[in-house]
Image (cartoon, rainbow, N blue to C red; front, side, top):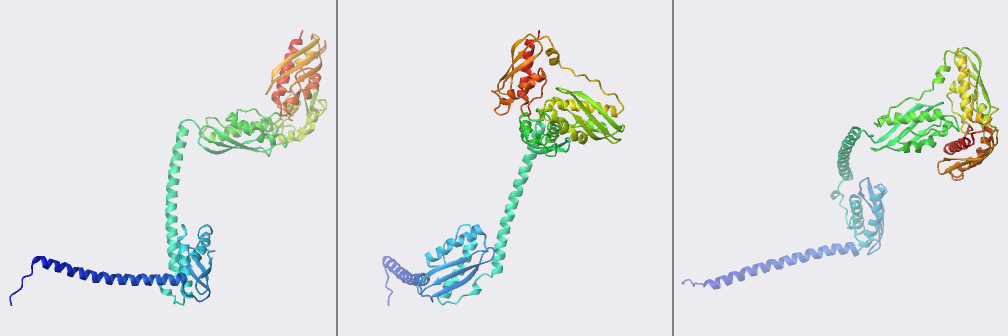
Amino acid sequence: MADKKIPQKDFIKGLVAGIGSIVLVFALQGADVLTTNMAEAAKTKNMEAAGEFTPGTYTAEGQGINGPVSVSLTFNETNLTDAQIDASGETPDIGGAAAETLKEALVAAQSAQVEAVSGATITSDAVMEAAAKCFAEASGEEIEETAEEPAEEAEEAAEGEAAEEAAEGEAEAAEEAAEGEAEAEAADEEAAAAGGFIPGTYTGEAQGIESAVKVTLTVDETGITAAEIDTSGETQGIGSVVGEQVADAVVEAQGADFDGIAGATVTSDAVKAAVEAALAQAGSAQTAEAAETGEGEEAAGGLVPGTYTGEAQGIESTVKVTLTVDETGVTAAEIDTSGETQGIGSVVGEQVADAVVEAQGAGFDGIAGATVTSDAVKAAVEAALAQAAGGDAPAEEASSDDAQAASGGFVPGTYTGEAQGIESTVKVTLTIDETGITAAEIDTSGETQGIGSVVGEQVADAVVEAQGADFDGIAGATVTSDAVKTAVEAALAQAAA
């Protein structure tokens, strides 16, 4: 039988049709498989979401980052009705906080598979792991423990991950610290080269009259930004309060060039020395100098035992000091200032007697507001010590330009003098006859209220008693007091014949 020749066109059509049939068969089979798989997945999901459960509460655990996380789920026949999660062993602000979010998510999803809480992945996975076990148990399924990662391995993995992150963090911190150190050193070198300060906190000490005075300065590249001064060991009520009074002045002066506190000279000088010592450490060009009290050294050796009396002119009387000394120093002091301004200079003697013994000489803090009397006591102490050391007491005579002028040579009348105070012009009006000052009116009302403003009424009588400007100023109002004295002298100059 002869072969029948098939046209090429018909052959191609047949081939295409055959291939199409084969593809269709496989496509139909694939669709059937896909449909079957989707149905199975849906069935599983539906069983979990709205399945058939044995009512009750089921508890299981999953491995968290710090330990087991416990999940308790309560079911009725068809739904999950409640969830409780114990993540107390987890980091409180991370895993612990995530537990509340996951508890609500489980009930809302009716499934063990919920979205993990950001930043608490390990805790979230532990909750879902435990929840899956509860769902399986409530559905009557067997739990395959072998499929789960052992707790120890999970813990080791978590620790390894945490250790790796910590190591990376430490490496970054070390690198940043090294860079910061290098920058700081460069800045210090630059500051030192420029003649400025090396930023930091520096402490200097100097000997006060009764204790070591400590000054702590905080400086930046430009200068002092803060000062803490401890004079608590100094004479109570005098040197002890210097620290808090001059701290701001140290910052304003940018160093030790500030006015000391009247009546607390030794402590003030100790503060200055300590400031200079601290600045020296900070790279300042200033030189630290130790505060010295030479009088104490003099009194501490080479004395002839006995009782010695020294005198010096106070503001209204002769101040007398009697010292008892042995080979080692001053053992007792009696000081008579009873003739000085009552209530001010008159009480200096009893207030500083012990201080003379403690200081072993005249290097003690004077009494604020009684500078002239205090200085007279110091001069009398030195005179007595000079005798004890085998020398002669210096001859001192009471003298006062104002007193001499007051004894004669004034043109009777009323005279006004002015001087600049701290906030205003201080005005003094003196009434004078041939013998001296008979009355004084002093206007300091423009000065600091409650301090300088009350100086005028406080010292008016003292001006008349002193017959001039040689009176004790008011503690805490030095500038205003000095302005009053200057104004008094200006008025007296007009009255001079």
